[in-house]
Image (cartoon, protein in one colour):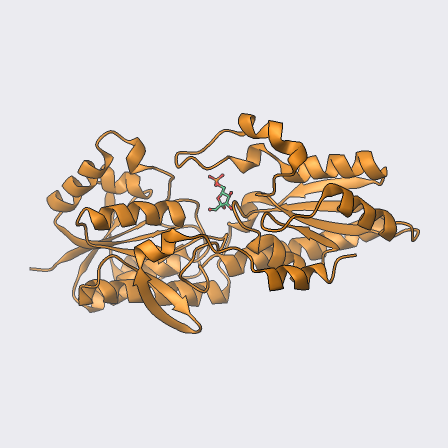
Length: 345
Ligand code: F6P
C-alpha cells in the first residue's frame, strides 16, 4: 500500500514556499509516497482539510510567490484540544509523517508534536532570517532585494526634493532585512533592534548632512525597533495568536519621521514597505534553496529521521534537531552592524 505523507505552510508567507512544496512533492513521489497538502497551516491539519499534491499540480509553481496551500497563524495551543485534533487527523487520514514549513512559532509547534510522538520534519521559513541553526531561511533573499530596490527608488525622489525619507522594513525581532537592504542600498543610517542608536544621534547626523544645501537622506528602520520614547504605545499595539506584538500598529517609521521633523525641522516623509517585501515571485536564490529544502525534507522522512529541521550550512543542505532551531533567535552580529555603521552619514 502507498504510504501517505503531508506538508503544510504556516505563519507569514515567504517567497520560496511553492518551490519547497514542489521539491517535496517531486522527491516524495519519486520515493513512492502519496502527498497531502494541508490547507492554511495548522488549521488544515486540525480540520482535516487538504488537497492531494500530484506532479501535475506542482509542475508550474516554482516561480510563483505565496503558497498554493495557503497559510495562517492558527495556534494549536489556543484551540480547544488542538494537539489531540492533530493526532486524530494524522491517525484517521493515515499520515505516516509530515513536513511543517514555518518560522519560530510553527517550529515550536513542530517541536511539541515531536515530543508527543508525531513524525515531523521542520523546514525553516521566514523573510526575517532570524532562525538559529540554519545559515539562511528562504524568503530573506527575495525580501532584501525588494527592499533594496525600494531604497534605490526612494533615493531619486529624495534627491529631487532634498528630503529625508524614513523607510520602515520588516523584521519582528531582528534587523536582518533592514541591515542588509540598507547596506546594499547605501542608506545614510540604519536602525535595528539589536543595537542602540538614539533619535538624538540620528538627528545630529541628519542636521550635519543637510548643512550642505540641497542634500537628501535615507534612513532605514526595522519594524521591531522600540525607542524608549515609544514605551507607552506598546500596550495599545495588541498581539497575534502566538503572542507576538502586532508591530504594524506601533508604526515605528511614522513615529521616527515625526520625531525627526520636530527635532530638526527638516522635510521628512515616511514609507512602510510592509507586505510588498513578502509578495511576488521568489528570487532565483530562494527558488533553488526552497527546492533543495523541500527535496531534503522528503528524503529525511524516507530515511525515518524525524524531529529534524532541514538546514543550510555553508552551501550544503543538512539537518539539525528541531529543538536547536527554536532554542535561540539568530540576531545580527556586531561586526555586520559595525560595517553598516561605518557607512552612516
Ligand atoms: O513572517 C514574518 C513577518 O513578515 C514579520 O516580518 C512581520 O512582523 C509579520 O510577519 C507580519 O505579520 P502579518 O502578516 O500577520 O501582519
